[in-house]
Image 1 (cartoon, rainbow, N blue to C red):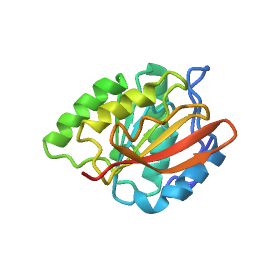
Image 2: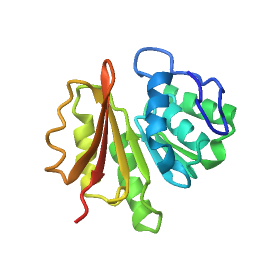
Image 3: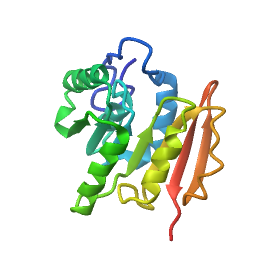
Image 4: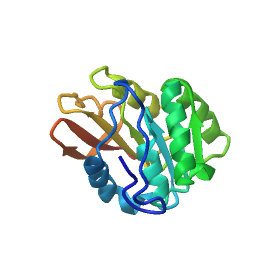
Length: 190
């Protein structure tokens, strides 16, 4: 696994040992970032269920001004910190070691106290546990994402997203791969 483009291009990243994380392959990561490249420059990027941090690191490498990594697994947090040091991107990164829902509560307070909403929120939760729905429910009622925020959910192909409109999101795009999907969502303008 490596950084595909930008300031840290071609640098190899460590992955978390064991089977608890499922790193996004370089090919899927490249496809994803080719689709969102124009949205990255100067934004705040939120990487939920960060694993090794590869997605947020790619965002920083390609021009995001800040990335927040949320991961509760201590081994994964160590891996993220090592990858940030190795890529020399730690100055613009914040690593939060906690449950995603507790982190979102803290990030909401930050936005309420003047921090801007995130430009892109990416999540890659454990598959088939409905965690993406719970996170979207939380984001729907909060301020961390506004109507300009691009939300990207990585999930298994069989994940049901029929509820997103009821939560106040619209589907911008669905990109399918062999075993998973990226859903691109945005809050409806109200």
